[in-house]
Image: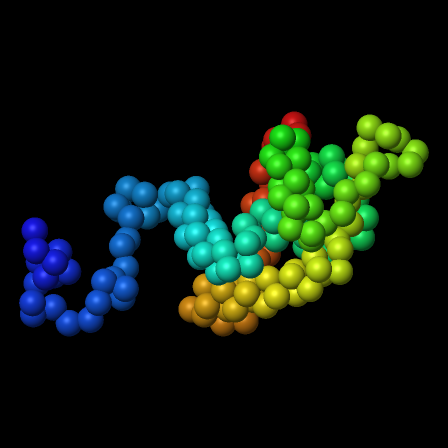
Length: 168
């Protein structure tokens, strides 16, 4: 197949970047599918935007949580972020290797590690937050302020419900 044919032929105007691939009708009404697809696309774009900083979306999550609450026990932070222990260790290893997070043994319980953001971590997080804000603005551009608030409220409600059902 020629390049022109794969792009809709020589008479087609516009570009593939403007094409919107809608899911099949059977999936378009499936909330779980739509949430998953939106999540995939948002994560892909965020990862691409964070790439030049050497960060991944999960690095951003860990750093944001540390900035919000100061020092955290590594295991507790992993639980709070729903990150399994093995993955959390790897993420902290990477962040520590980049000089963004400091990990110290807890003085009262030597089995635990306390995590804190370094100065470089705070600076990098500020840059990443700017990237996140721009991406969120672009992603939510089709919604007005009230629509954005409703979306956040609904998503938070769904998340709370899922977390409660997981604990039951």
